[in-house]
Amino acid sequence: MKYRSNATRLIAVAALFAMVAVSTVAFAQSLKVKGVIISRAGNDMTMKTADTPNLVVVLNDSTDVQQLEGAFKARKKEMSMAALIPGLACEVQGMYNAQNQIVATWVRFTGEDLEQAQSAQAAVHETAAKATTNQAELKQQADALAAQNAALKAQQEALDKQQKEIAANKAAIASNSARFGQLDDYYILDEVTVSFGNGQTKVDQKYVAPLMGLVQKAMTYNGYNIQVKGYASAVGNAAFNQELSEQRAENVTNILVQQGHIPLTNMLAPGAMGESRQIGNDKTEQGQAENRRVVVRALLNKGIAGTMQGLPTTTK
Image (cartoon, rainbow, N blue to C red; front, top):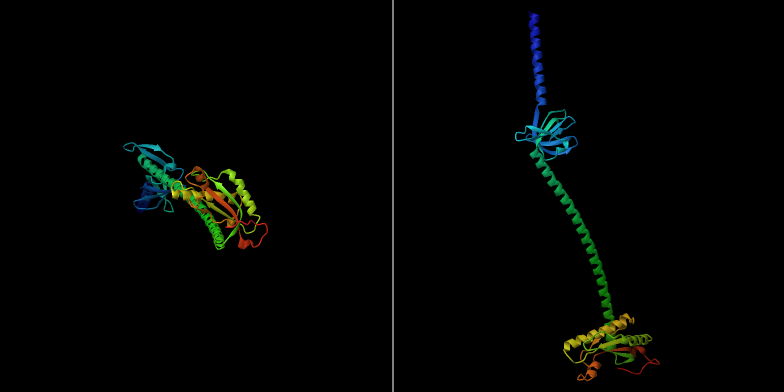
């Protein structure tokens, strides 16, 4: 009787341990969590649940992924693991491993939740694409602005250089003009008169040859200078006639400099005489034509020339 009682007790204890083990296994297998997927990396996905902000769920080949369908979610649709995207609300069943991660037996989610997650992903991708496009456009604009700034800098440097050259030429011309203004008289090596039509400032081509002849003659002397004075008839507005005389003098000067290659240092400042010094009667067409003129003179100052043989005797 005593042995039978001990055996009965051993059987009862063994049965109790077996029930505990079965209960533990059943609990491990029935573990379920609900949450939102926040990231995926290979077979691992991280979820945010009510209790755990970063719960790692391990997926494997036997993990069953299904989408619940219907009003009562009674129907199920087999899905691939590619559907498990960040932002998807889902339910996972599995058990913990030694790393305190849940090894998923199955994953369930609704079609509505999947659609919302996909829309969120599309918005994220669209935002990222726009950001990339915006960055590319900003870089392109920055490159274009840098190129434009470089071009503007180069233009400014060229303009500064040109302004310095103009200032130097003006200073040389002013020096020559002052020097000639201080002397009493000078030799007139040659003289050409260019006539213009009424209201016209363009130089007739027939005067180019005489002007070039004056240039060639002047260049045979050292220290020569060219004087250009423009005139207008007294017919019409005086201010307009002043502008006409100035433009006529400038156009003749351009021919001397550009075609005759006269250095600017040898040019006296062009004079715009307007209606002054009329040589013809403005009451007649012939007199008016005589007054519409530019007088070009090749000069050699006596103080510079000294005693030279063969110089003309005309002075002013």
